[in-house]
Length: 324
Length: 127
Image 1 (cartoon, one colour):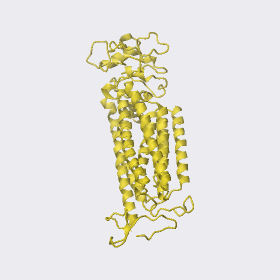
Image 2 (cartoon, rainbow over the protein chains, first blue to last red):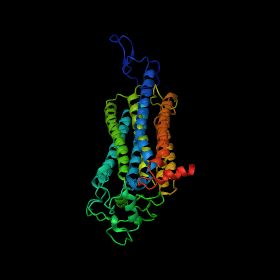
Image 3 (cartoon, each protein chain N blue to C red):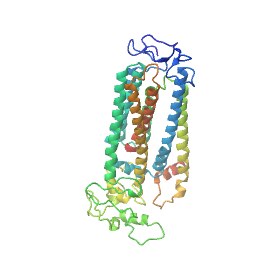
Image 4 (tube, each protein chain N blue to C red):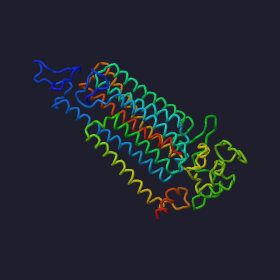
């Protein structure tokens, strides 16, 4: 099996001698004939797994696409809860960690043990930094009630509750058989005080130029034309300057964006955690000197996984953070 | 690969060695593209913004796949596996979107709070 030997190459341990019936490298499993066959099979298996991971995330991307297609206003307003700065930091961190991982594969392929160890350690550092930024983002959102489903209750720190999750009490008109929401929204658009939340005692932040501080009216959204039925905030062009905390009082179903955000970044974060476990295992093996130019397959496959994690984030970042 | 980036170092018996200069160049390109994406998002181009962002993301993803993941130097079948997964992903999302686009206006009449003018206006434009 040692027919491929290059000058200067570190020889991997070979199982030889009278105790072993046939000579083959120690890392060659018995159900493979040659190391190249094992390597190709391992790589193919890993790519098949990555294909399943792509489809795993595809479900959530489909969720995103359908909701953004049918309720774009939720996305145009909801993304303002996110901080682009942290998203960009995470992107740079992941790209750099992908680079250090690819460099680690390079060092493994050239049998340079300690540069390999350093590269894996740097990749791990990037992974932890990513989780740290995630923690900052998530804890801020949870603290301000910017979460999914019925717990969606955005309020800045120091403010009282944003609003009750019951149907907006702005439907001051007696409940009619027709959906009361359009009537209430029409009332809000014409500046009547029916839209003031009667319960919860919340005082939304006074918009500049508001005639009275106690009611928030859809028409006070800066640069926005009169509201459409249902209090829908119209367009991307009118999106600048919208305060999402205030818009949450008026808009229906804004929590769906937070559901999209937390499910997608949460699933991605779980993959980062799994990647941390894999990378730690690789780091231990690298320190023990298990990987060299003859056998670096685990480093290669672990690297492929980490690059997939980076790939998913490359798509998540613009779709969630960079909605204009 | 016959020429390692450094003389005299070990060469992998199996697989291909991507020079570290290529890896570094890819990393720099990715960071530059990230900066471009963030800057482009601040410029208001209407409906184009989404597609530009996705296009730049696809370029970045291609760089990661081809160079970091060695697909350019690898057996073509591995690339076929990935492309097949992407084809199925596009089928999945595409067909689901055509379904929701075609039924949207019938499910939600115009005076309903769930009326989505973006989709219905697309329908109106395409007849």
